[in-house]
Length: 300
Image (cartoon, rainbow, N blue to C red; front, top):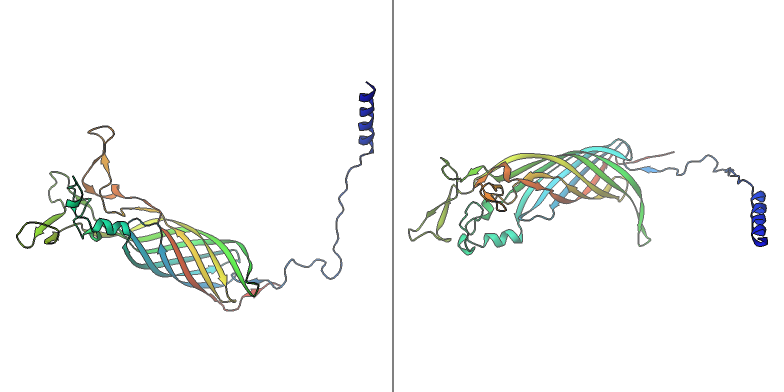
């Protein structure tokens, strides 16, 4: 009991001796009193127009990669906000997967006689979807800016930005094709024997095979980028972009029904909008940015 009373008395004494804390305001005096955090800050963006020629490369393509040449133009309303447009067009080429499919004939795939999905040897380019051009209207926000040094000798200004907008793409893909039974005037793969010795991969001409059509697709566009300024009017721009929209990249019949049996999909033997699936269309670009006017404004 005496020990408990001693502890309680000690705590009461400490509590009685405790005083409320008081914060003391530090007043800056001398020549720096009231001065801004940064003087003569170079505003690389505010009030300037940027023109950026670019080379763009698509990423993670399954059947066809693309290289697009284009340019961006943007006006920087503030040093942290801008609005602009982007346009690029180019060409595509087969991936390794598409090359393997192209080297196979229908007869090389056991049990496969569906020409709508499995073209004869050498005809894969007649059905793969293509990205012909890509445009965008977008806004950019620049949350980070600063400087970095290279080997402690060279110093560059840089900023990191994100953007969001509306993307418009020109797509060439397989036209509407109906090979279902009993359809009059159906456009299906047909072959003509050139030498009269029987149809084979080396002596076959495709007649009306896999027609292609161009269309315009619309979707959001977004991404992030980095600009490194070598001086006040020229810099290096690196950017990642994604513009998702639906398209039939493989040119194959993907849609079917299960009405004839559970757990098994029966393809409808048609190529139409139902066979398009979401493609994210990842892209990296590199460009050279030119700023106008060539001299940046500075803060006081």
